[in-house]
Length: 422
Image (tube, rainbow, N blue to C red; front, side, top):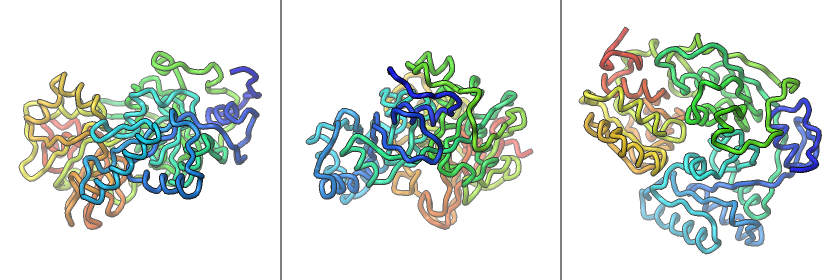
């Protein structure tokens, strides 16, 4: 891109928005910028369509940058849901929009796999965990139906330029400590509102795989962040074309800085009923668990399923515990079938379901009854999130979830046979 504005001393978020706006911006400024991709999920699509048809002249600026994903209640759970989804499909096909139908998978995973989130892009989604795209250093953020509809109709959006919280990792992870444990530890440090409408900029992530970076960026919103950006490095540049201007400026000014010592992190769990209610797993060992759920946009990728299969190999799920496994996408499912992961999970007694969001938001495919306890690899554990308001949800890593499924109660992920109660 020629004629770049002055980017010296700017954070990643400020650099992206300055380039898109065509001038140097400052935190707190309101900018109107073009969008590179707009993603609409089935649960919000009817409201988006209504705004477009009734309030925005029934216009779509550029169908090529719009993706519609049916993933939140997929397959449909009721006649009403099925009817609504049919209307969404018809709208997408009639208007020439990209449609990912039932079974293709969770919106964020699908867009990542399809290359629809690229470094330096602005990617809007009608789902709060659209921060996931920050793993590749795309300015990914969630918006409500009216703002998404406006972006679809005009090809542009308005944003308040966020301040930036710098998170730097030092040291090395100990055995059994996953990216989920790290991400929850960051939220514990920042708290649920510690980065409200900020950009979280993750530094020194060289030991994190791309899948793990997706987990980090995904959970940024649980600290209140508008966006979570992983600094591009050799790994990013191997898989994506990174603009030369998209770098971590050593002179950038941050609103707040946090250092996370990876050496000090143990397997952790987020206890009911707040994501920042984070404790060491050892503090809740022995809690009886009715259901274990492995999946979602946070931890439903191939490496997550492989980790679960490794722990379950040669074992069986506890008699009074259900293990529900939902791959994040059809591609994840295909790969997990090809390498034997799915066979191992099924042999251990896992229940396999259609790629998608599943019971994460409490609509179908494994909702909880009153009094039940679930260990989930998802991203939220609010009251009523997965069904009954009297159920309890613990958020954990795939390894902790797998070991717990074998034991029937919460255990450490490095437990021999999943039964170590120490």
